[in-house]
Amino acid sequence: METPHVLAIPYPSQGHVIPLLELAQRLAQHGFKVTFVNSEFNHKRVMNALDRDNVGNHVNLVSIPDGLEPWEDRNDLRKLTASALEVMPGKLEELIEKINGTDKN
Image (tube, rainbow, N blue to C red; front, side, top):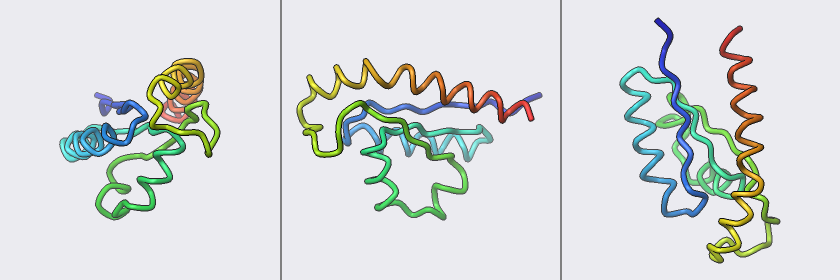
């Protein structure tokens, strides 16, 4: 039987990242393969604050663009949501195809 693979994808607002990352860690501890998909902006913030030995060995941390430029205000939830809904689904599909390709090898 294959190991179940979970994609954990938080809403790209900072307050949603840490609780879902904690859940992802628990799933990994129970034998799930976990890929945590963050926006590029939040991924950089998480990587700077993260204890890699505690999380990185159990959860695969990856990022996809949210569609906003680095200097744009991510506190404007209307703009962030519109951009994320336009850009992230296609990037997520590409990521899933890549994961499926590497999981088969």
